[in-house]
Length: 441
Ligand SMILES: C[S@@+](CC[C@H](N)C(=O)[O-])C[C@H]1O[C@@H](n2cnc3c(N)ncnc32)[C@H](O)[C@@H]1O
Image (cartoon, rainbow, N blue to C red):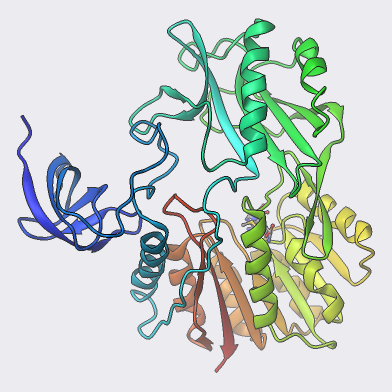
């Protein structure tokens, strides 16, 4: 039997594990701050150990029983054992602890969250496999390659659960061949569902190991559900753990779903980036735009602009918006969305933000810069260019506090860093989104 230790939990790691320092430094999955717990070690290391709770000796008043029946197998959620108060405070503390390593006097607001912390995801990505002769659809097991068969996921929108249920029956009924990862054989690899805010547009994406449209009879039955306005086949024949390829074919209805965000409409295609929690995204973008204190004469860069959301939400307040985005289809979408919204003062440049910003600032004086990069953060060349041209104000939106801290440190050479607001965009997981504004020193 594994050795059992006990200790008092003094805080959290960035991914929601309880920190215990009594016998050694250990990060314990499932332990809450201020609890005394018994735990066994799952991994030992030179600097720290990892473990899991075997018994809670003194329980936190903020401990709650995870409502999800798959919690012990599925790797999707990490903090269902925290009640809403604890989750909110953990995220604030995690952001603060990460950022203060880079910015000494950083201030962090309370985490902004919704009343409803479940049923929020407008994008479901589930693997499809055959295990013990059964078709299983769900998330990968937290400790391996098996897929956990999930009939009802508490963080996906309810409509998505309904459609996955229908798909499960249709896949069996139509005897669809299922992908086998080890043999790299079989047909259906993943199912992706995306929806707009009121489910009037839902897209179903079949990721397949092959280009044949053999599942047309299934699709004909599926689209009897009138909420489904788009079916796409993503043809993905490579042996890789990337979920999708760049090769998509529309099999039914539109190429996109159309969503409304604040006052604007946005067409979202199968592979485009789009925030997964509609309601909190509106709150977050509102704060980001307010913090910019925009003026009619401002020229704004929307760096990492995706399908154009941020720039188009603020375009009526300013003289001009220039978006920079590296994915060509996203640039096309942003241009289409500007037309859809009747916006004439927004243009989009295809290329890397770090390259294109240098060309733009040779021709224009930029007052305000929005930065919303992927998890790896902004490129150093991009940050150096900002330090050369010194726009008055920068608004940074980030889904990764670690790279946000690194980038803020670079910018703090010439900018005062404002108070950071964490947004609980991905509730019940440890992930968090942040907004911060910077003003010239
Ligand atoms: C977090 S998303 C933000 C998209 C958009 N601002 C939104 O809120 O919907 C990051 C975007 O940056 C793009 N991207 C990644 N690396 C880039 C780079 N070096 N230069 C420009 N865009 C990049 C990605 O394609 C993606 O659309």
